[in-house]
Image (cartoon, rainbow, N blue to C red; front, side, top):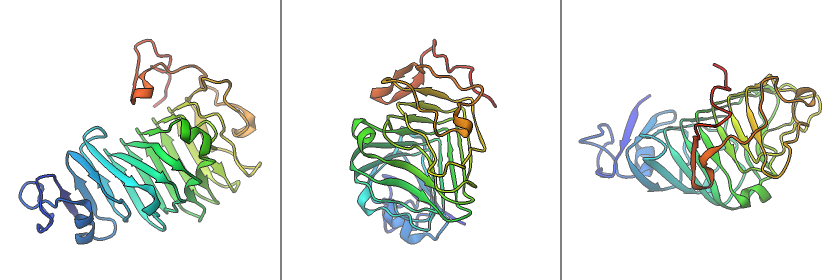
Length: 264
């Protein structure tokens, strides 16, 4: 597997093999020059391009590398796709995406510009995997009203979700099982206005759910989706006290009850 570089100082006539002397200017050109499972290393700046390829997209950090993509042209069907150190902005009408392996690490996924939606990520085939680590998933009042399912998992799938923030997905089933054998590990996360969290299959159980913070400004978070209908033993149901969540600042205030409430 190889790495191809994209920089604002680059040129698409370059080969993309060096970040300083041979970088591409556009992600599309780097994707064309690369192969499945290669890495596209993207520098500082904003790129308004369709991200629809089986690659790892690696940025500087979630504030400096920004990818803006109209969701109508994204499918990710059958792909292994990963985002690391990226801010990904999805806009427009959302259509179902069917990746086989999906990973978000140290990234910010912004759904606030969508206008219609169904299931965001559908992973129904056996053996498909989802990883979410140290990432923020940012919804809106529109998202709260129209997204029926953020994620649907099928038989023998695996989801590992740690150290993430999920903001404003009130009406969405954040994760919905279609089979009892799905494996979900979820800890050290903050769910803010995520009030529905339930499996379609009543026999489904999470492998591990604990040390999370659940908060709904409009009432109680539903327990119906958890194994036995209960929160994890160490979960807390309190306002996490973000610095400015509506403004996209998810740092915790010094008095936040979430500080020290997680688990290694």
